[in-house]
Image 1 (cartoon, one colour):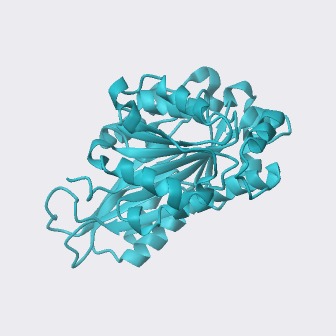
Image 2 (image 1 turned 30 degrees about the vertical axis):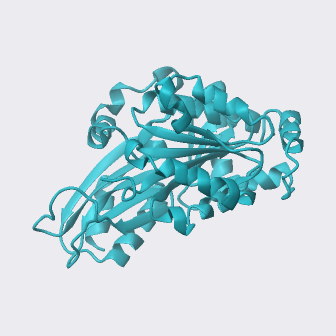
Length: 352
């Protein structure tokens, strides 16, 4: 597959200074086994997060310049044409050498305009937004603040003269939650189980229907949850299905991502619009974290690719999909969640 035909998945990670974004990315880069590029967009001391990521040893030194890219001061939504598009076009020149892109952006940068920027004609056919992940400091929130160090955050805000969408910290936090397809509650290992449950309930009331709030410790989150892909997807999914009970951290269950998965295979005629409606309903009803799969529809030569993180569902026909078209129409789907009812999911699909 050449670089121009591959749609790279993009995960946007947002959250305030100190929420745990860089720790999350370092863990992901070191442990996912995926070839990821990182686009860092911070305010003020821009080089700090980039240096932290560069120094973690996730790739050979000679590849760093092509894998970690920093944007100058300024919100991406204010510099789309001048900075964001050229940067993305440079990354996409080597798309065949990458599995995905992660954008780490400050909580001071409005996430919605950034997501909209991926709809620009120059890049929309070569990327897809896999999801917006908002990292929230659980320890700070339990203490009554949306940020651990308000003074440092205010200094970061004042360091950028280009920041013209002045909003209160609470308004910015609300924007992060509204844009989120997944919320990660960091430092959950420093909280009691009751506190984690209370914060999950509090945040769930503030996000869109179908968005999960998942506790996290020291950035330890499976790549399949954050990115929707792993080096060996099916092996990873079966690992969670069959071996999950043997690998929980028993001393701090409340802060561990205890994912379940289900694989649904079904042969039969499917209608795309009804299928998408059923999947959206199941995502909300089961609070599914991720969906990934493909469907073969009557009269269609290419498979319908299915990707979802929380309520963000995207389906498209993929002319680059490997393999031949099967004789029968049908579907194969992997669902990830904290409590997945595979039988209910399959029954809903059969009724589509």
